[in-house]
Length: 297
Image 1 (cartoon, one colour):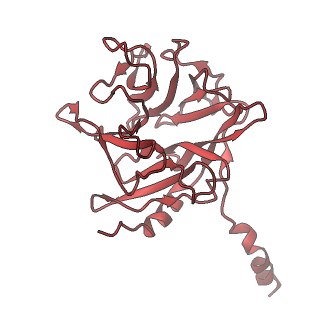
Image 2: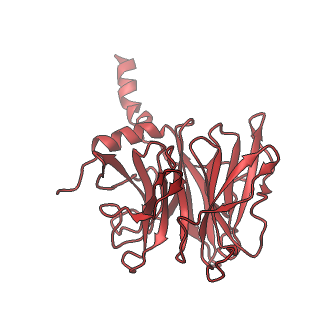
């Protein structure tokens, strides 16, 4: 009888929802980083070093040896200062890395905003970046992620100015990309939507929105593809979102873990930005999928 009472008394403590935790403080998270990605085998990481600002944005890289991350170095393709490089993400098979840069584009001197690039890992290091010219425009394209089929989801400034920024998709068909299209409602709204992480099989999408109904100025949301339609977006909840900004989501399938960046302001007008993670993400995913509903026709 006493043992049962003890279990009942302390059960609420054990059943408390987990909270997202800061990732590798002092090694990767140093109060000035965002845009984290991890290779499928979990042994190579890349992220953006911001130093809490947006004036200098460099992609850093580290490899894991004997279970420990080695000293980060500047990625070889991110050495063209003063140009900026952001938001690396591995493809599901780990053979391709997407990132964005505002470096000069051959035959397009008018382009000064971010373009999408792809790059591959070779025996001699990273290959030369390839500008995805079938997708890029004079507008700013950023934060891209890719499915197993090769479809690329990304953020772009909305041409008509409605919604500030929206999420677009470019499908890979017959060896090339079709013109990107706005994925529309219910995901894109008059708010700012950006940073789309698309699951490998295109089953769900996680992104940020400035929806004022959220917990902070920027929250992470999820929408599921049901009968080839996107469900009404759901906030990922207070275990992940906070009164500050959450952005740059990335799900590592093998680890069953959600990574994202969290940002807050410092007194000197620069940001505190770190990488956070949420374990056993599939449990939350199943819960949210059960409550997913499609918009009314």
